[in-house]
Structure formats: structure tokens, C-alpha cells
Amino acid sequence: MSTRQPPPAMPHADTTGVAARTGWARRAERSNRLMLRVMTWISLHLGRRASRVVLAGIAAYFLLFAPSARHASRRYLERALGRRARLADGFAQVFSFASTIHDRVYLLNDRFDLFDIRLHGQDVIEAALQRGEGVFMIGAHFGSFEVLRALSRQHQGPRVCMLMYEDNARKINAALQAINPRAERDIIALGHSDSMLRLREALDEGAVVGMLADRSLHDDETATLPFLGEPAQWPLGPWRIAALLRRPVVMALGIYRGGNRYDVHFETLADFSATERGSRSEAVQAALATYVRRLQAHCESAPDNWFNFYDFWAGEAERPAGTQAP
Image (cartoon, rainbow, N blue to C red; front, side):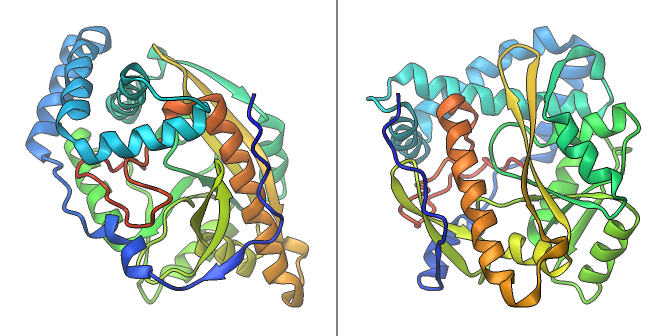
């Protein structure tokens, strides 16, 4: 049982070393659109069970020939497991990552029948949506966010769009185009003159806006909070946007459980609709602290679902190519 103490309620802002912390965003991706198309063809024509055989080889290759990722994985796993990490633990983490990327092919092609998806905290997201004001759905590079969007499509739920920076939006659009040219690409890219207007309009229409809040980008201001026993940097941007637009925030994680099974968890993080301007900073800090505490609990429960393959605590972000996972 873990003896770690939960993070303090109030983080402090840190604006130093931004270039080092965001180095992962400048690393070139090795994503190959032709290979994505080939893998998509194999997956859709040979079936999920047959094509999954390839994943073990991919995971083993990645584990053996990406040393910086392997070392970062070991450091994370030893914190999450509370013991010395074995090679099998590292393989399980990489295989889970490969599996969620592979399953995206089927989810984007509406093959929901292939999966056993169990919901937890469904009342949380339903209550937030009933207000008709739109909801921010905060995730992480943990498990599968695609399974959350697939649930909405399967059940004809509200529009789900992603809020991300322009560079990431371009890469995601290219990947989706390779997997399924007809796939809906509902992405709001930050950095444009109309970005906030498009975001507010989506929320006013009752949309769910997804954000991944575990990596800082560009010149984001960050806060320092303990995570798995060591200080780590967390971006404040997602929380400030939600507070500025005065919307409820729900944590959503699609946890991969092996085989075709996913557990989708919804948890209340904050409701900024009643937050006054003068107390906005404290509300942002409290929401971030809750997010970090809950993410730590899920990492300890399902350590193989963490998909940040760089030294998350060092801040140098030695992120290997080819590890992008929205």
C-alpha cells in the first residue's frame, strides 16, 4: 500500500525553465502516414485479433530500441508500483500504449461491437450536461481519450471536440486522415484570433470540450505539485480557460484493462460557474490539486496506462518520437 502523502491543496506558479519543460513538443514525430494506412488496412481486413499479434513485436522493438523511453518508463513505474520495476512491467506499459493506438483504428471506424466498455460515474457527466452550458472534460496522456469520444458517437450524445495547440491539431488531423478519411475531426486549435469565440460557441451549444492537462506547451505558466512522491510541473492554462468561461469541469479517463476491455471513469473536479473573479486563482489551484491527486490514484491502480514516455519529473522532457497519444 502506498505511503505517499496527497498533494497540497495550493500549488505555486513556476515560470522558469519553460524551454526545457516543453522540449518534448519540439521533438520530431516519426509518425508515418503510409505505415498508418497499411496498419489500418491490416486491422480492418484481418480483424482485431489477428492484427494484435503484430503489437507484441512493436512493443518489444520499442522497449529494446528506445533507451530514453525505457529509462523514463522504469523511473515512472518504480514510483507508481512502489518497488523495483521489472522488464515485464515496462513491456506491459508499452503494450497497453500500442493497444490503445491500435484500437483507435476500430473506434474511428465505428466498430463499437468489438469492445467491452464499462462506465463509472455516469451520473457525474449526465448531471453536468443537463445544465446545457457545455462541459470541460479533462483527461491526461493516460489510457484512451478516443474511447470517450466513441461513446458519444455510439449513443448519439453531445458533440465532443478537442482543444489543443495548432501543432498538435495538425498532427492529429493527419493521423485521423490516414486512419479514416471520413472520420470527424472536431478540433479547436488554440492560437487563432477566433479560437476563444469558437470555443465559447461550442460550449453554448452544449458541447463537451476535451483537454489533456498533464503536459505544458509553448510558454504556458505552470504550477509545482508533488506527483507520485516527487515535484512535477503542471500547466495552468486548461484550468484558467475553464474558469474564464465559467463552466463545470469533469475528469474523464478511458482506462485500458487488457483484451477488449475499457473502464471509463467520470469524476467531478470543479464547477467554475459560480466562481467570482476575485477567487478565480484559488479555485484554479484547488481544481488542479484535485486533478493531480486523482490522476495519481489512477496511476497507482493502473500503472500501465501512463503514456508519457519521458522523464516527467526532470522537466527536460526527453520524449521519444512516435509517442503522441491524445
